[in-house]
Length: 266
Image 1 (cartoon, rainbow, N blue to C red):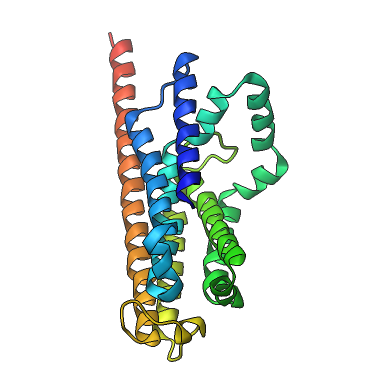
Image 2: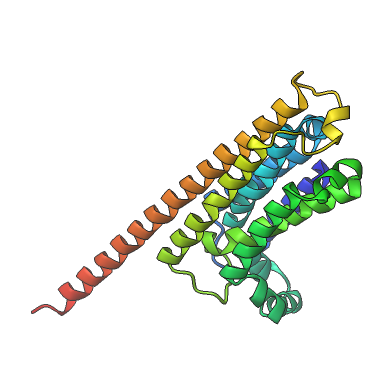
């Protein structure tokens, strides 16, 4: 994502917050704004400037980009609740069109948790262990498409977990935990497969000078470790957050039940 596109997204979000407040709709909280901005900053930092230059010559740097696209930026962006903001801040005609799109059969199908999970897993395995990865290193348009595929798949994956915005698929806490538990081994197995490969998977790194002055195979092993460890760590943190949110929700429900019981007691 270029800096210009990041700034454009930030300005659009700020305009949405402004019009949402003017129209007296449910306010966007400070932490939601911070989360959305952090997601944009993470994308801009990973996909532009020196990091992007390093990614062209180093597998581990490229894997770092993918970790941001898959694990870090999507949940932060979704925590900013951009869909609800777009619906509430847009003119009525635009909001109606957007609502029709969100209720369409295609969106209903894509946002189903099972489909979102399968798309996410298929994307990470296909990108890293198919000719698509080598093609992306040779062609900027393919590279941009690869990043778009990973980001899109990750947004679908994290959408039912974050629980922000309109959805046609109720997703309970137990289902969220199972969803994450089944996804966690995918990152670990992929990272392990890359780490244990005894030959360089992508010829591009054999002919490109490594910026960290290590062999292509050592760089590949580090990339596998990064996917294995960082990916598993993010999933573990997500599991803890879902479990904590479940506990808080149960505590709130218990307080409400106690209050009702006190209200009807003689």
